[in-house]
Length: 149
Image 1 (cartoon, rainbow, N blue to C red):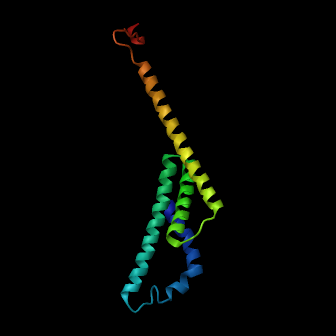
Image 2: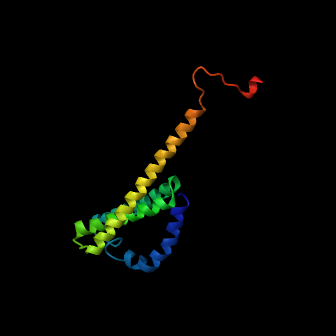
Image 3: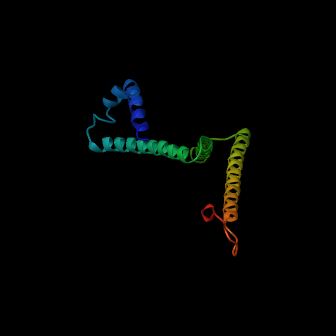
């Protein structure tokens, strides 16, 4: 994580300077302002966007380090589904019947993955508990170890 963010910054900075650097730095919207409030608003907006991007990359890093890339892929699909729902609800975008069927397939697949993962996790834990229980001696029995010989 500590190496990824600076590399992303160094990779994107030349592209930013080439595409938007001169026009943005000479515009009245950022640095050449007559009042302080528009510049502070722009810097706050940029800082919020940067913080959100950092949080997204950091959460992806933690997700992959604790789980698997399949879980990351499913989380990405869930994020896209949420984006589509927010676009329809807040921005007024319309979804066709085919879009709703695709939405249902995605949500069903995510639910199936979570259900199977939970089922196998519970069954794996019960197998470990059963094996640990079998290794314990029954009350009243004598345990012979290699030290007793």
